[in-house]
Amino acid sequence: MTNSRSKDSLSKTCKSYIQEIVLEEKYGIKKEFWSRYTDKGNLVEQESISLADEVLNWQLPFVAEGYQQYFENDYICGHTDVNTENILADVKSSWSADTFPFFETTIEKNYMWQLMGYMWLTGHKKANLTYCLINTPEEMVLDEIRREHWKQNSFWNGDEDDEIVSYIRSKHNFDHIPKEKRVKNYIIEYDENLIKDLKDRIEQCRIYYNQIKSII
Image (cartoon, rainbow, N blue to C red; front, side):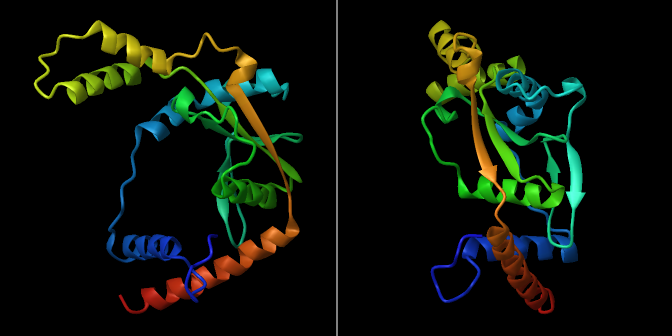
């Protein structure tokens, strides 16, 4: 949704993403994406939802079973993390305390658009963007310990340094922080004017998509 700095209506980032879609559809060229941050988010998703439910008193039934649901309309599609009669939420699991928004009062625009889309898809008039600070799973902590050893010593022989182990574990365990301080919640309200902007931008994207698909 970012506006281009030039006269073109679409930004370079937007065009690049559409180009990736065309290449994947026509030639099977798929850009792979992986990160330890998303891996952690996937592994602790249910734990984050449970923590948010407890701290924010959402009173969700059957938390352990999950709430992810798929929706689509003529313009967008998406999977909601939590969608009940009263609660619509997207739950983000922070990688570390350094990335948890303890003091942030505003949200990233990308997440605002994401939640606006979910409200459009589900009919909710407000949505929660909820950050949770959850202990990193042990297998990932062990990977980080090894990574740090190699970072500090390219000839590491496998013997662990107690200081490195202690340092890494301290960065990924948050039990000493009260639960209510490990949940940060933002409320976003539905805005029909923003949905109109979203529709207009999608139509522009479709025009560009058809243009490049016909010449490649």
